[in-house]
Length: 119
Figure 1 (tube, rainbow, N blue to C red):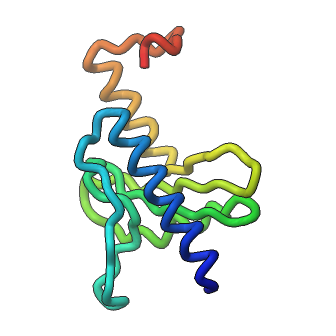
Figure 2 (spheres, rainbow, N blue to C red; figure 1 turned 90 degrees about the horizontal axis):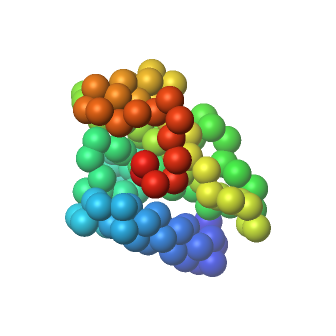
């Protein structure tokens, strides 16, 4: 991987961490891993319950990249990816999405006709 590609990836990770801090996860920051054997496969920490893998390429990363996040009980693996001049998207397992939405509804968030103001 070239230095430019690493820099692009690190900047994207910082951008995603900043977005999560603005959304209320005040401890969101890049997760640094220095030993390959100890890698857990996520790039952002402090965003419980999520384990976020970031990929910023010329086009979107394949959704199979979510498998890089090693399983941890109670955590929600998420892939956040962006291609050059493309919107950022996230991928998570459908079961996790349903669980998150069910918990939100159980806590009183009406998702039958959500608006931007609801979020």
